[in-house]
View 1 (cartoon, rainbow, N blue to C red):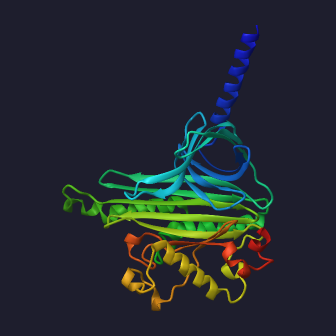
View 2 (cartoon, one colour; view 1 turned 180 degrees about the horizontal axis):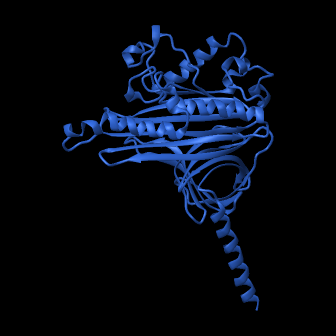
Length: 372
């Protein structure tokens, strides 16, 4: 009788877990709090798109974000998350750790974490939470493909802020919508891109106009077009919402192009955060000096050679950080897109500056000042 009851109990647990997995939407954003090994508190951001997972996490004590790569979820709610640790000398992606777990309910994940190269597994648990100063976010994914002659595909990931203040929602969502639809907007026909569907249809029609009409001129190779836009949640706490919007396009040229836009919103007001909102007047000199030191260290540049001699396009040889910055609990990152200060082969240089390095520049009454 005891064995029968035990089997019944186990079956019931498995059924509950299976039902939880079945109730998970195919597209979602979830913010989790939890711990690794019962002693390392972490915050995790996950976005699901069908079977793919993306996002990041950080240790609450340190605050610096770690991205996920090669991550997935199956129909039973089993998850696989790999930590991004850059690339080896052959440009193969490296991982510093792996989360292997399962959704045991719609809002809870449990499993094990293993550091790369270690045989020890640490238990982890995550619980979906949205404390004051954070927001729920809805995710919509759209795609359209043409493959009758050649191929053209476009995919759009849209996020919609679902905060408890309607005024904040309206400000941020209007900004995000405008940004999403502006990439392919032309001065001649802005109304054609009044919606995501209009943008996608226009992209496909553009391919037909550029390529299909000249089909007689192509023998073996037919150019292919591809475009994708995604938005990643980088930070969602302490009334700071930091986003990374990435636009990828390939229009038959020598290589694809990627443009990354960093966006920081104050959830108390819905306004975009500017540098002078968080830093004291006159911050530019010291900030640029520290940024230059980090930049030279990143690329191992020589002080005895000019930037131009080392392959960079720095106007008047005076290094300056731009306004494409991303805020977190621990610091601020500045990203230069391809061709902004260097040829395509250099990629997108990024400079990270810890708040500890510029603590004397931070306004005490700013959003960042109140986080410290």
